[in-house]
Amino acid sequence: MKSGISPEGIKYAVRQSYGKVAYTALSVRSGTVVEDGKYPEGLAHFVEHTIFKGTTRKSASKISSYLDSLGGELNAYTSKEDITFHATVLKDDILKAADLLFELATDATFPSAEVEKEKGVVIDEIDTYRDSPSEDIYDVFEEKLFAGHPLSKRILGTEESVRSITSEQLVAFRKEFFVPANTAFVIVAPYKEEYLERLVLRLTRKYYSTAHPEGCDPVAEALPKVKDVHIFKYYKPFFEKVNKDNNLVNCIIGSYAPSLYEERKRIAATLLFNILGGPAMNSRLNSSLRERYGWVYNVECNYTQYADTGIVSIILGCEEEHLSKCIKAVHREIAKLQRKPLSEKALKAAKKQLLGQLAVAEDSGEAQALSMAKSLTCYGRVPSDNVAALKVGAVTAEEVQSVANEVFSNMSTLIYL
Image 1 (cartoon, rainbow, N blue to C red):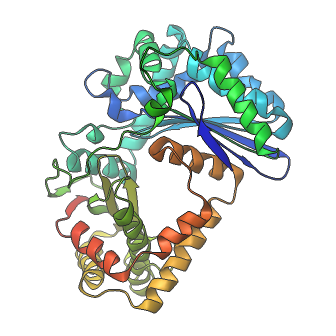
Image 2 (image 1 turned 60 degrees about the vertical axis):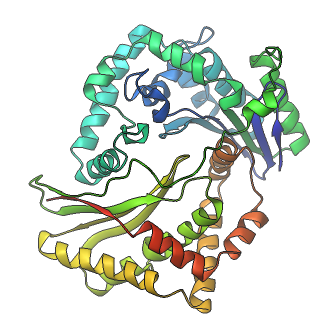
């Protein structure tokens, strides 16, 4: 892998792969949190939807068919802290795909007629989430947990906020945030990395001016600004039940968790939450609540990391008659992890399982490209597989226990009945 920062201030990484397919991703450090007060809620997500609706050189129809005609795919997603566009194409078409991503990021025009049409699509998406208790409960949980902070805002926005969005606001958002210092670009393709690096630098030179204000250092500007880390000051624990007249109960139990920039705690927390409720059948909550007792139709422990803080959420679905038993069982499993450090054997097995899951998850070129873009956006670098393994390997049982006691000391609960 080769990585660096272009003269224009764009972070990039390239990796040689094998086969006939190539992958590219462009990630912009923006997302829902930067809307706060200045832009309507949900505008960042709306940018993702409408950035494909035209540039000064290509119409919406031409963009939609551009990669399709090559047998490729063009996709995007929005999180609370970034917007990412990515493409999958045959290796011979990687330059066309990469060029298109840069064109969209620098020249999207957001035509008013297309914006008005897309509002209906996004509002339908909002309604779909609202009608799905398992989706809606998570949004409401974050609203309550992060009340008073931009992280509390919904990625999709509300019907009212989406209807208020204008083409002019979308253009202004792109111009303000889609700048080199916020941008990370990645290619994973079956070509030598020296060639891919030259391709990237040629594109950044084509789409961005190298002229900078006097005293400006584009390389320094491109590095992420890491904030002072502290316990999330907006956190106010709560316990709430909401009557939704559902056939099944949805429940979230969670709290703040280590942020992106609390490295030792973050890695220990990842290991802890994977042990407790990761995707494997042998996770403690799955083994207990589902396999042993059959109380739940699903249970999982999710961990999302943000710049200011993180969130851990234990999510379960069950019949109402099993709810109190499920909540007690969750707290019982947590207490075990708080009271006693993992044995050397259990810790070793947990580390091996986590590293295996990470390797499998990033086995595809697309997953690699997206993971690399995320790392560049958050940290300004892409760690090697060896470095990641060493960091996981360095976690101690005492660190896992300490995180369990800190994170689960004051939890919140939201229940949809």
